[in-house]
Figure: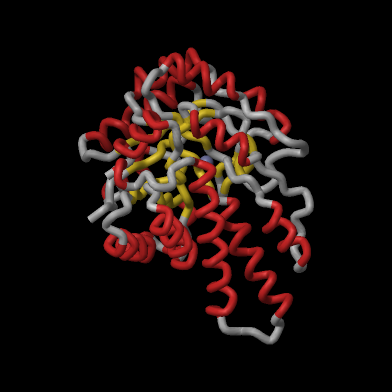
Length: 316
Ligand SMILES: [Zn+2]
């Protein structure tokens, strides 16, 4: 069995200057596309499930799909992680369901309340050998029901390095999602964003050895944006974080990079292309199949950007 926690992965990523890709899963094709990519690239993997994914697919189906992926790939360390747990109860439910890592996102609460809730989750999770990611600072954009500050304001809500030190000491979380200029969703920015590398650097300096997490880090790849817009879609203003910035952050204290929008766009782009080019086609395998293939190729590319390709064995 290669189902594992995130501790070793994040440790190795920190030590050796790369980041683990954390990809959101909602159904079988998305999961298969991601798994095929990490299997070919021999990369460690974090599969993440949001509350929205759980509501859509039900935990039983998602876990069954993930279990097959784990069984079929014993040489790949795979962690299953709750993305944006909103309360102690949500996190407890995912821990009890066998997840190896959970995120508590109480970043909208006042600092003391964020500390209190995050600490409560850490106590419950650590007693069961489950890792905890917490969040401090506010990201832009919208991710499912996770609303953030407006994309124009992301630079005003960056994580404060002093607070980060105090937060980590008080909560004893295993990793921290920081606001460093990224934003959730496909419409992150109006012009090319500048990540706050100074914030990443300063928090990294103050918390040596401690892994940081970057959310809202899809790049909105031109290839998929063009396919979507050329084949009846309407996303002309979509814009993400440049991959060069992701690659640079991955070499710093950022050890986990969350990617969801790029998966959604790859699948949507290919489905739109098939529908446009072959309007008589109605076999779902004929459009979901190419979508799955596009996800695989896109994820393989991301693993190179993050630097985690070939790192599976050292994370076991
Ligand atoms: Zn997020």
